[in-house]
Length: 245
Image (cartoon, rainbow, N blue to C red; front, side):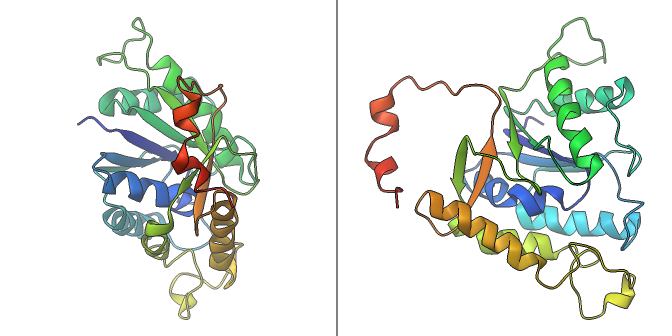
């Protein structure tokens, strides 16, 4: 199956927290989307690998994904190794996504920081003809970075106003990770994301970036390369002006 967009995260819920509004929007536009997590979350403070897999399944259904998959890279030990590159190369060649999403390379969690360059390098290497994985070589058109903990100056912002409610539902699929009245079911230890106000912070961030483009909710993205614009007059036309606050 060929995908239009494939998002990579270190753990289940990384994509949901950061850019699921955009993934959901792309699905609504009839693009085929997928999410692949590098680990199974077995060392997470709350929940278990089995619970996380079930939550990932539910979140994937909410987002309308064509593909969702967990790889077997050890949680807490995501490393920029050749073995791990090959695992990602095989997924990129299998699904041939036009664009790939990866976390921003400055992050709080070491696994997030390592995932960023790992995906970027694998996306490039996947296009090399002499790198043999018994698959056709394929290189995505672009690697696009989503924001996790630390902010960046966005290359662009996607309006997710019509899809924010569905984004929140995909996040809440991870009951083990977020605030829940019956938290003893998943463990008593509190984490940054299990605090009651954490989801409000996500909404506040989405409102912040939405305000930058004159809409209710937005998600920011960064690309490393300059963006090509063939027709600046058309690009910065009336539709663009309508978004300026």
